[in-house]
Length: 462
Image (cartoon, rainbow, N blue to C red; front, side, top):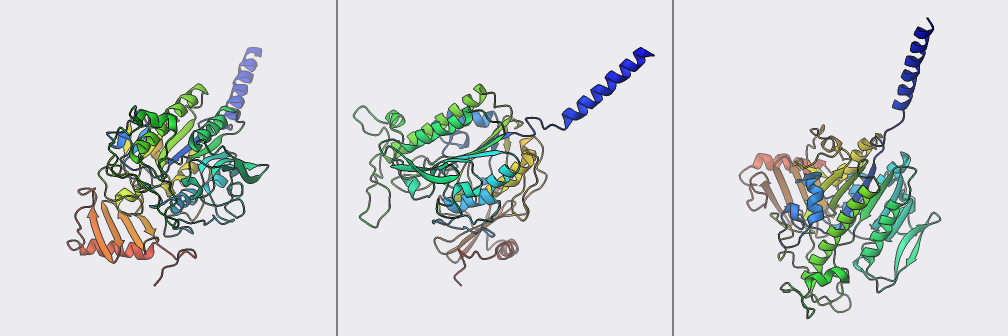
């Protein structure tokens, strides 16, 4: 009888212990998340998306060890609104910020870092914010960031050599003095890696908003040497040396080797991705950390950059400031945690889908009244649960342009013209089918009309 009692006691104790343990989230239920966003990196700028001249072995390895997305889109075709879409889960028909400028996120908006903090995460940002400054509602510490080092505004981020950056100190965003002879990217990168190295009592979300390869065209000097001849000239043909315009012109400084600098910036960034992956493995973080890599929009053609020289948009038409595929379709690679290895997804997705995806990954409730849909299922090897009926963009800097993708169809409205493309057969958007398929155009036009409301910052000029 005593033995029976002992067995029953042990069994009941095990049940209690196991049930208690199941209430404690595992590390994979509370994964760390690192989101890396390059600046003006084109769809064809890295090897696993077709780049032939610039070698990107680390990003290619990341894709081979993770999942590569072929049909991932930015929030917009320029910086600030694209980053706003990422942070809020809203597409351009519902966004407050729909163009570049010094426009801050409003105080009461639901944003990605706030969501992560509310669910027990520490938050850190390194690089380019572009959505507010220390004196307004968009200041990083007011939008949910615990730590920050980088550029607050787009204009400031045009300078890789600067006498100051910005940081959060004692709960406030303050100027951080810099040696103006030091390239900012390696400095910011080391600060990001230092953040990863320190112990974390809570799971963390790190947003690494890399400022390269945006103009101006200055790569870190040590990497640039790889692309120079012994006499200091570029190993590439430099057809478009950039000379700064007189006062009132663009802010980029003169540059006589933009192609060499372009290659060196992408090379340096790729090497940093390799260092990151090695560091995560050394710290034992690779099994419970998701890493994402993407770009904020298509490749620029500024500051002397010759986009055609490196075929930066690959098979796509257009570049930054276009709503053709080259301006908005961007690389996206997911790696780590449970992400399937060596997989490719062609599901049409956009960066406003990131917020609900992260909510699913951390077992949290997604914010309401957003346009994004979670693609967490793809990251666990399943088919996507929800699919977009359509994706919508608008752009205000050259008048008013709009674009819609619905399945294989893409409608582009600009400068009074309406074009229709079948992306399944015409990825380069060379053949306008609007006249051939008026019913499809009418259906897409209805989406255009019903997918937006005016923004007080960007009202339509009717």
